[in-house]
Image (cartoon, rainbow, N blue to C red; front, side, top):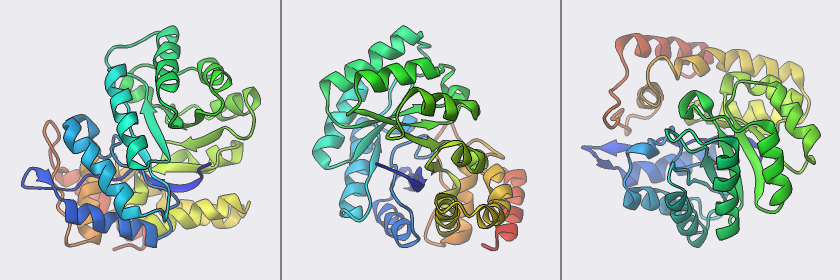
Length: 293
């Protein structure tokens, strides 16, 4: 259903409020540059600092501005199952193609709890779900057996995963446990090349916020099995992948975007702070290496 370069969009702020005009411009630019789908209200979108009203407005804006040109995978995750369902129901009515649902964080549910959480969502809303496993942030790990069980229980609804576990063996675990129809998307830009080689079909990307055309070209080269071209592009992007995390994300990516677009602010919401001088230096060097500055 999904593949290629899919940016996990930043949420632009201006004087503490959502900058709707800037967000619309970001959506247009991403589509023009070749991004194959869009993810609003993910980790990079600072979803944990948004009110529900803001969260829903951003999803609505993204769908409205995309206007059917690319699908929108709405960030719907929460550590409260009922609130995740609230986001899913809104996103379905707004026209989202799928929901990106992160493993509940802080609560630390067991595998049985994860099965119950995602089963509840699938049973109460028919919007397709892309699981999001990022144990480095949530502490909770959606183990391969749990992923496969969920996809077997709900084949029409649990349709893929954004895997940011850092464990490349899981691509094969999921592929051998399920059919090729299950969509595997990397959640780590720096691992996208080996992830795709193992059976992935794309990346929900941080770096694509800043380098959408290069990321799209890289993913296209992977899809065409052009390893030489994919490796060349990966080498150009590689320092940028790491620079995006030289400070608490998304502060570095927001700074990088101000280098690309003068109309964007690098404002983030507390408890995050703007990128440090060290992070800015790393971003500047990586942008130069990629030929973007």
